[in-house]
Structure formats: C-alpha cells, structure tokens
Image (cartoon, rainbow, N blue to C red; front, side, top):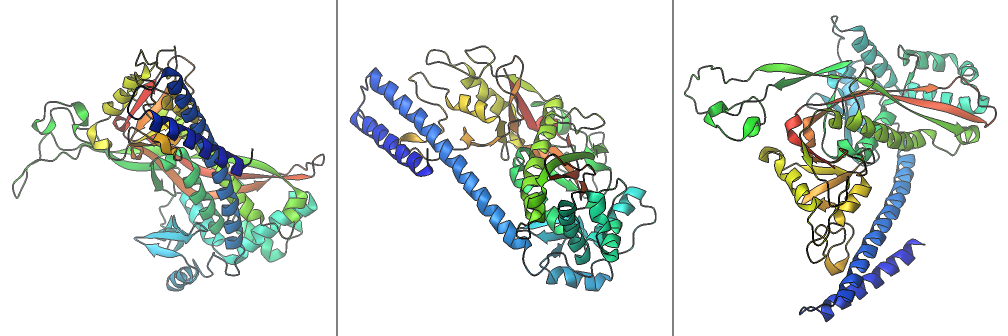
Length: 494
C-alpha cells in the first residue's frame, strides 16, 4: 500500500470515528458502536505508525543525500596544519569550520551541528612524558589523521581495494607518500584510523539512532582504556537529619546543610572515590560490491558514515542494555542489579488487562512512582516497540485506551509518551512472553556512563571474496559503559 493510500485511509478512519463520537456525544453509545470505535482507533494507530515509519525512511534517504553533498564539498573538513604549530593549528581549525570551546574541539557535521570530538590537548601541545603507550598512540595517530593527505590516501586505498579485489595488492598500488600517510595513521592492532571528519559523522549519527544515548546517557570522551569517573558514595537515609525516604533523599554524597563561615567536617561529609568504566571494542562489518566501491560517482565514505553508524548504534544498544561486564562486554543497565517492580497483567507473563481487571495498568504507574523524585524531571521510558504496543492497548473499565497511540478523534501521529514521559524504543529490551523478563526500564538515563574513545579504525579484510566479487570492511569502535547511579532507574518485570 502506497503512502498516499495509507494517508487517505487514515483520513477515512478519522472521519468515521469523529462521526460516531459526535452522534453519541450526549452518552448512551451502544456496545456495537463502542466496539467499532475501538477497532477504528486500533486501525488508526497501526496506520499512523506505518506512515511514521515510511517518513523516517524518506528522511534517511534525504540524510544520505545531504551527507554525500557535505563530504563531496570542495573544502575538505579536515584542516591543514593541525599538530604542526599550535597558533597556526587553531587558525586552520576555525578556517575549516571547526571550533574550540572550553578545551574541547568540535567538528562540523552534515546535520548542521558541531560534534565534540577531542580535547584540545589531543591535537596541540607536548605529549606528557608520563602518558601510557596507549595514550601516546592515540594522540600520535589522531594528529596524523587530521592532515588532508591522510584522508585522500585513506579514500584512495578503499577504492583501490575494490578495483584490485585484494587489500594487500591495493596498498602496493598507492604512491610512496600515500603509503607513508596510511602507515602513520595505523594503530597497534593494524587498523587504519577513520579520518576525523568521517568519525564525527559516524558518532553524531550513532547518537541520534542509539536508544540509550537518545534517552540521555552521560557520554564522556576519554583517551584511555579505562575511564575513571569521579563519584561519591550515596548518602544514608538519616544524613542531614532527614530520617525518611531512604538513601535516595540525596542524589549523591554532596550532602548540604546550613553552616557558618568556617564549617566543620563531620562524618556526614561525602566519601569520594572513582568509578571505573572499561573501554571495550565494538565492531561492525560489511561486504561491499567491488563495482560499488570503485564507482567514481559513489561516495563510499558517506555510505560508511551512515550505514556504519546505524549498525554501531544497534550493537551499542544491545551491549548497554544486556552486556554482562565481562572481559569483552560493557556492563548493561539490565545487568546492574536495578530495583524491580512487578508489571505482569491478567495474562501470564504479559503486559495486559481487561475492562474487569486492571492488570498491568496500575503496576506500570508503580514503576513510575518508584523512581525517587529528583530523577523524575529527566526520566524516560525504554521498551521494545511491541511491548509499547501492549501498553497502548491497556484499557479502563469502559474499554477506552489509557495511553492511546492516537489522540482522541484527531488521530494524531503516535504520541511517544506514556503518562507524560517520553518513550524510547529499543529492540534489545526483552519481550513480555517469558517469566521475569525485564520489559520496562524507567528513569534518568544520565545515571548510565558511556566512555567514548574517538578512535574509530577500519580494517580491509585480507580474504578475496572471489565468489561474490566483494570487499570486506570492518569498523572498530572503542566504547564502554556502566551504571553509575542505579537508584535513578526502576525496572518492570513480568
């Protein structure tokens, strides 16, 4: 069914529903009309969702066109001179559209935003002699990749890999200067650093697509393998003379009180420490047709920026929700021992209810009100889309939807809110078909820390895919995550 046909059907559904409501506005709506109205609302919800999905697809296509135009701009967005002289480097950044604010270097991206990419020290100044080998490598290859000759060599290497059908052979076809540039941008694992402007495009798109990031997780850039984030121990329930409410009366150990000019230290002062967030490696891989790679019109870097970001976002969401914190995985929210609330409905292990039994409806409100008040202003729901659909179908005693996806007789686009709080979907949240599944996550997502190392590297697979005439490309991302404040969340389980 075409988008125009769906819009026309939605208008018909709206008109019929409005007519029923107007006809019985004074009350006394017979059961058959109530049933018809419910069916119309359900159909309207489905149509509105399908229209929204098709609009998102159209927006994705438009985004790729904008990205392609941006990356094909005659002015390269990687400035010349960075790392050679500090004053000239700052001028080069500004001339190329980059910015330095508050010690952070921001890269321009095709969305019109400025993305924070590095600390100023990463690009300028002396490398501290006491830095670890990993930090020194990070600074070295980042500064090298900031040069325009590196970007040109990187793109030519990818295209030559498609033409030669062999990554090793492609490297030999590069000029001596191009080989030198790529070698200087190679990390200890043998991966070529993705040019910084392409990294910025990957990262900004990932932030738009990844559910945990969109929900408001706190992102902290780092150049190290472990981010040591400052933290304080939570205050006790009686700290400051407040005896009720539990440890969440205070959102941290920075406990306040009235004091004189020279306050004394007591045993209620904050206990300071650090919170470790290990940086892991995430990879996404693809096989591209060699004809696609070698096509002079195709912007391969634009394709990698958009599609690579989409899949990085999916892998991140899986890990930031379900990672077990082992050697290879971040510690996900659902593995962090968060406080749980039962939301099982009238049907076993599901979100459900009936007109005669409230089921999951009041329990979902219990989840909402179990979160301490200081975390509520920024709180959001996170659920799988199918579970959101089950929540939308919860009804009151008269069969009316409690949190409809379409609003009244107007059938607006699906309201991405439940009880006034935004809803973020992630397909890596569990389904409500298994006992004890954690199907609802609610809270202030800034209680989750993402450690991001702006060092996306790429590997051209050495194998020759002769049977499919393709070249394999792997993108490696350095990122970690862990729950910094578990009290900012509550989990609904069935």
